[in-house]
Length: 248
Length: 248
DNA sequence: CGTACCGTTGAGGTGAGTCAAAGTAAGTGG
DNA sequence: CCACTTACTTTGACTCACCTCAACGGTACG
Image 1 (cartoon, rainbow over the protein chains, first blue to last red):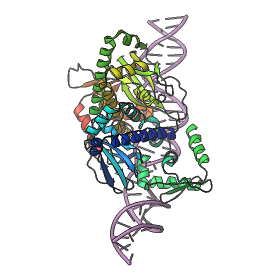
Image 2 (image 1 turned 180 degrees about the horizontal axis):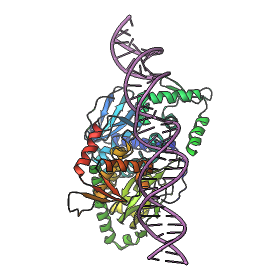
Image 3 (image 1 turned 120 degrees about the horizontal axis):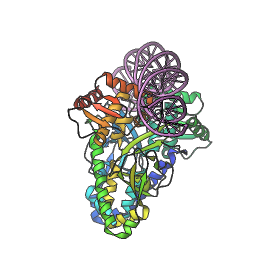
Image 4 (image 1 turned 45 degrees about the horizontal axis):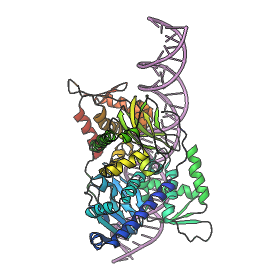
């Protein structure tokens, strides 16, 4: 393999653009739904309580899901029984599209992290929508292409990075979805819908190790956890630490 | 996260179906190429020597690449300078489609493992093809959806599995592409176009660790390496070992 | 005021990384 | 055809981040 100049790839850009694409589709889809009564009939709005599963790993896909509200965790259970969380989806996001277009059983389960409302678009309806709005083909191609590519997952699952760094990267990614907008001072407050266990599945570590990493971050004065509330006094410093350590 | 019954997912089914889709596209694309002279003019056939790069990480995509012959390794260099190989593509396979449809710089580089010939389909041509053959939309959606999903990559990169097991899984996946058909006795012979270093990037380990794992497999009587030639006396036993250990 | 779950802390073991060195194969040029 | 270079491979010794197991503290809720 020849030499190569690798620029930093920040998780946030990935996530942001993916969300953007999905939100766009959501708008288009809703437009389509309102457009014809027949379409509206084909679309089910479903409510899920916290903890419920929207679909299960290994079950055949029946359509695609569009989140109206709430948050969903996508996770895969491997052969050893380890759970691997790889995405947190929020309002406007689409889930279940990979299995749908792959025409393969779901490779992951989708569990509601909070109460949520989901719009289920059954197969025949997706087909109709794609016919009526060819632009959707392009959008879905883009969505699949950007979804869970190397850079995003590698910041969190790359075991060359110590757990502490993977945790920082996770926070930097999740802050876009969960940071409270109304911070008086510079302190950034993030309210995660994730337990320690959920965090651990996302960064490929045990929950005990996550607890220890959290303690380290507190000792460093970088991040303070209280339950599922996270306080970051200086977000720039945290970003710097993430980049610094990457360069070592 | 609720209880869940997880069936075994074998790498081979994944890889096989993806290859199949790609080969199908290649046929369709070639048909299209012959169909109109204008199309043919827009398509460049390029030769690459072993070791050359077809495209580089972080460079903007210019089209998609369809392998006519030879083998290509897709690899990503992370922020720490670690190389991460995640796919070996062969004749009929498509590469570079993720960046192309994602409209993002390449997240990986493609390096020729052996001398190879590649058909480069520039953007305008892909657009034309998609218009002329709408079925291609569906094929590409399927290709992207199946490509590098959780199961495939997790068998190789999941650090809950020891290196030896990840190596076995890699062999079981690569045998579909590289096994010699003409084995007299039951011994399966695989000729990999991969150095130890390349293997190590694919299973998230160091090359020294790979060497030790290879030695262990030899001591177990499961697999014999001689350079890049791999001999597997009893492929069924190897598969069993892979499945057994998964269940522990 | 239990019960159940979540979270923290400690002790101990180990798989795999790191560093260093020697061995082997594959070209290259004289 | 043989030195010589270069790249690939193996082995050993050492270290450490993380896992495992186990116990205990905290908090929510009926």
